[in-house]
Amino acid sequence: MAAEPKKIIIDTDPGIDDAMAIFLALRSPEVQVIGLTTIYGNVYTTLATRNALHLLEVAGRTDIPVAEGSHVTLTKGTKLRVADFVHGADGLGNQNFPPPEGKPIEDSAAAFLVQQAKLDPGNVTVVALGPLTNIALAIQLDLEFAKNIGQIVILGGAFAVNGNVNPAAEANIFGDPDAADVVFTSGADILTVGINVTHQVVLTGSDREKLATSNGKFAQYLTKILNLYFSYHREAYNTDGVYLHDPTAFLAAVDPTLVTCMEGSVRVQTSGITRGLTILYNKQKRFGEITEWSNKPTVKVAVTVDAPRVDDTQEEVALDLFILALQAFYSLFNARRRNDTCTTTLPNSSTISNNIFNLDWSRLTSLLKQVSAVRNRLCACSNPLASGRSLNGA
Ligand SMILES: O=c1[nH]cnc2c1ncn2[C@@H]1O[C@H](CO)[C@@H](O)[C@H]1O
Image (tube, rainbow, N blue to C red; front, top):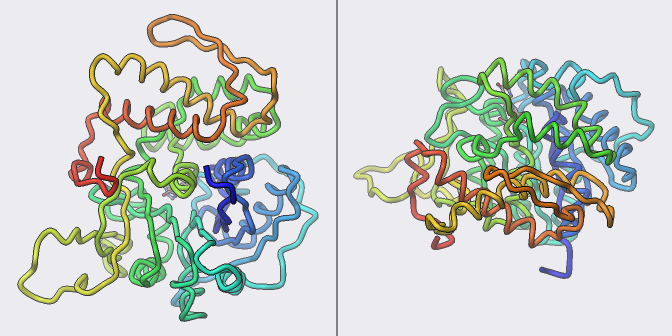
């Protein structure tokens, strides 16, 4: 493990799964959260700022600055689509939390991003969990930004699968397709994790029950705000589980080997009925004519979670690890208390007791890889991209 924690800025529209990702980040020794920047998406920007400040106060991390982002799209559009039906009118599951005491810094999100990238060129990662307006503004504000920023890890897009706003578009890209197109073609080092991947990472109802039994501060907080998110998923997807979009993107930023990628140029449809559609050109076909994808910079698109070959004899072990890894994942939301033990019933009915609250990051990520491996084997993945060549050579 690298000794120096990775500096990250989380661009966020909190948001229930944003809250999960932020808490996860604050619990991860591998990263140093140097700021939160806010954006509309799940809520309007003013509320996103309020929620970002509130979450930092809950976590006792008011030392981390919050920079408020754009209130309008890149093209100055004011007709924003916010997902209050997913996250509640307050963005955090309608819990009526008290207003935060803190205030955002003077700098705008875009100015903060530019400044931080310049201060430590190549070493700041942006984890973008909402529409990409702030990132596009930073790119336009400073021609060097795309070069100065270490990496931009995006939760966004629906690659070769239906969107979640409509069949064409995923919510974050739909929120500002023009900004997304600017970012994808900027030449920055970009990894995008779309819902083709995040829909494979699910927190189930029984997982939530386990989370509720923990008396850790984050676990209790998340259990409360997750209620509404579960109701939405029950209604929209007829399932007792929620997609862990933002936490998955964050984890990919910390350990890119958790996902496999394809490389190519991504363009975004900015108008018409497929507005917000993300199309990756994987460069496998040489077209006879110049296209809108020709000569555009290459980005990485996550197509599946890394699946080390798990043979049949290993599968049962991997399944046990799957349960364990889920618990480990949630335990990151909790204080790492030395003597906490947790008992779980495994699919084969045997019971194990594990001191999961002391798992270190490398153990956790290797467990998560096992989760991925099992998911990939058990859930026949219909995404044609998933059979693509992996960047990691897996
Ligand atoms: O149906 C939806 N409309 C709008 N936003 C959604 C919907 N489902 C999930 N999200 C939110 O958008 C991001 C992932 O696309 C996540 O932040 C998720 O909470």
